[in-house]
Image (cartoon, rainbow, N blue to C red; front, top):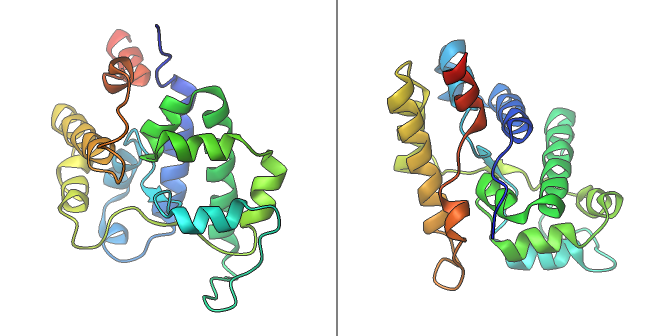
Length: 202
């Protein structure tokens, strides 16, 4: 069976979402040069998370009548983060309906989570998450993978940068909470990156 891999448009959307996320990040990201931020944004996966591995959160969000959590107040007035959250979820929703394996690759989520996302309408999904901010950092500050991305994963050496980014992607897909029960089809594991093919041909 043939599996469609990441398309040029998919990668362009991932890069745009990553760039928007990095623009909102203070601290260590802000200390990077613009060229390094641009190169980091080209990672073939989302640099932020929607807490995809939090089953309790998503069961709560996707039930028929979600109610705001009375204990944990995650409301925010940050319009930019809310806009990015909506755009990122809309992108993953469309991708999960079209190609759940690619949605899993770019989000690091399980196929089960991608299926739940695709199983609702876009309007319902965005409405159900509108009462709280779930977008968050993908990597903890002390995660060695973040250090790799900020250093070699954003460097000028194309070969080293791509190898570092693909290594981090591999860790996301093989060290998740369900890797013992779920395996990606072999074709999805050996994804090709079309934008790099195009660059090689120019």
